[in-house]
Length: 338
Image (cartoon, rainbow, N blue to C red):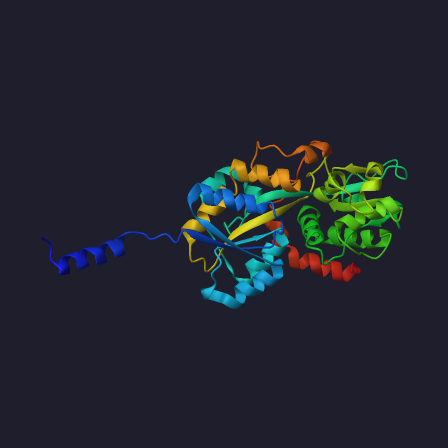
């Protein structure tokens, strides 16, 4: 019969050599979609790992991560644009992590080159126009600066991260000087001072305040889904153009995920991040918010099918959006894009 001392010694050895999993993962997310709950519930059903989620504005979450420092309980940070993830990168609240699963599934241009983050889903920045007033709409982002559109363009403010990422991509594609000329040209062509969100730009087409507008694809598709005030009633009068199809392709925004610098549960975090690229999760992103999967070969939903096929920009690594973010904001300031 073993002595009590031997039993205690064996238990101590097992405690030192046997990994203990917390069976939980803590997520800070700026995605405010109830549909994401289904993702986390499915993950818990498959793995037994519970997901604790805190939702807030991305800048608030970054400030919280910074204040918490090494004591932060957060394992995963999720936000809705690479530009916002760039702020987290600058704040030093992320850590690189490697996953062969994610590298196999997610194309390189949708991942940070140093493995700090990767795309979860894609949103496209489209040119919309009023069918009854525009016979030949612009075919590229660059054409928005053509003087023939003077007083006819509705677009959001320079503080909008979608526009910051768009300008950052133009810097990467055309160079800083050309990007500055473009931004100045767009300012000269604005139908009104920037105001409201993407839906408000589309409403401007319906009301006749502008002839051309820039918005993400899913804001337009929501006008078909339900009664969006000031949009649904005139939705059939709006046409769209997939920009830059003869060149680099349409600009793509990303919902983005990363592991936090102080992640107390890295194994569970990795399991969740890999799960978000599997077929169930990618289909969920597409079906519930009219986003496009980041994994090749996975279909979108009926809404995105309405918009037809397009060529996305795969030549610009989306890390350029964060790399050029400060320069983009400086250009906006210089040309008076409020």
